[in-house]
Length: 300
Image (cartoon, rainbow, N blue to C red; front, side, top):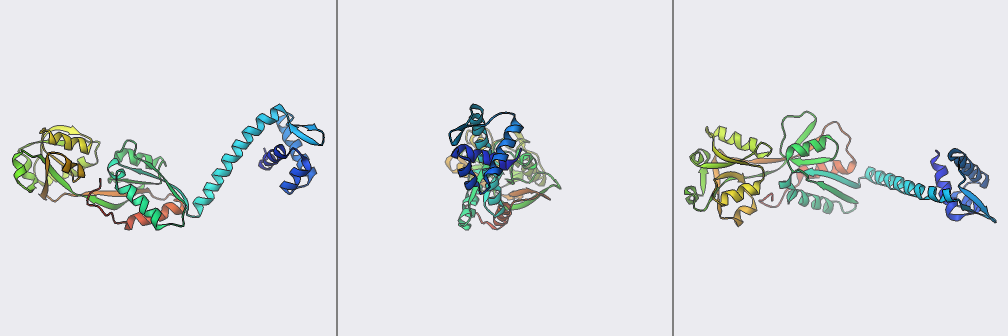
């Protein structure tokens, strides 16, 4: 089916006059008549019937017009979006773990818009699931242009660029023996029951590596996935825990002790697929993210 013929059909349906429609389309009237006849022959149904000097849609022509207008509108919108994308404008799909979706990524998105006032930029931010493994899976499935997460295994198809870091602290209840201190060595915490992040959390491997350096294994009484749930359990005296240095710790009856040995750090990365075409806007955003300086001591 000829796309031009569909546009001719819509114009004639609106003007209901061959001469006027041909003039608006900048074609000859015989060309328009031939196009409509070819369309009707292909569909094997009459789309127009005469009404004096004009033409009007048949019942089936009216049904066809509604569908064609919707299809052409969708097509035109898609073409316009692609052209806009090719000029450095458009929409960026970003996947991120929850911890980065609360503050860091929104701040980065806003600063990129401010740095590009001449661009038409929009975002779709995805944090469903919220775990690094799920975000990476979405990136591989082309759901996202870019992802912000922890580093996830060694994958030759993904480029990881460090963009931010977060301190880890030992959270203890206010009435805990360690609460009298401001700093702590990890080996000195081994005598106390601890709440540990489960295997689905990107923090688990980091914390396990810290205890290996401390030459010990914590007495794990509970495995939890969410940062804030861990902090809440510590506040209620269930145990102590290595957690991110987050704002919520100042709102709970806990004390955050600086870990001085081994010195911990949680890094966050911008992940993107290697050897994959990225639109100009996405390329610009990636370049901006590598130099962006986050202006808060807390990631969330």
